[in-house]
Length: 162
Image (cartoon, rainbow, N blue to C red; front, side):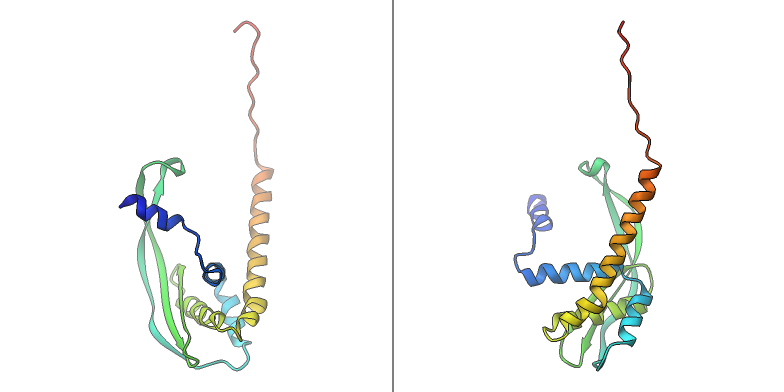
C-alpha cells in the first residue's frame, strides 16, 4: 500500500492542462492577498461568484523526514484556508493556501475558475500568474544571494605525520 501511495504522489500529471493548472494554482497560493484583490478589482466583466464551500480555515498536520529520506515524523500543525467557488459561467474553482486570509483564498479560487476557461486563461496568465511568478522568482533569488553572502566554506588540511 505504501509503495502505491508513493508512486501516486511522485507521478507527474499525464494531462498537460492538469500540470499547467497545478502550476498556476501553486502560484496563486503563494500570491499575496493584495495582488489577488487588485487583479480582481481590475478584472473586466466580472462574472457572478457564488460560494460552494468556505472559505474556511483549519489545521493540517505537517510531516517531515530526517535527511529528506528517513522515517516520516509529525513535525507540527499548519493553518490552512480553503475555498471553492462557482462562477456564473459554470466553472468551479478551488484554492488552498497557508494562513487564515479568507479573502485571498476566495480570490485564488475565482482565478482558478477563470484560468480553466479557454477564453479567460490568457488574461489570467498575463495579468496575474506571470507577474506573481516573476516576483516569486526575484524573491527567491534575493534570498539565495543573501544566504550566499553569509556562507562559510570549511576545509581541512592534512598534516604530513598522520
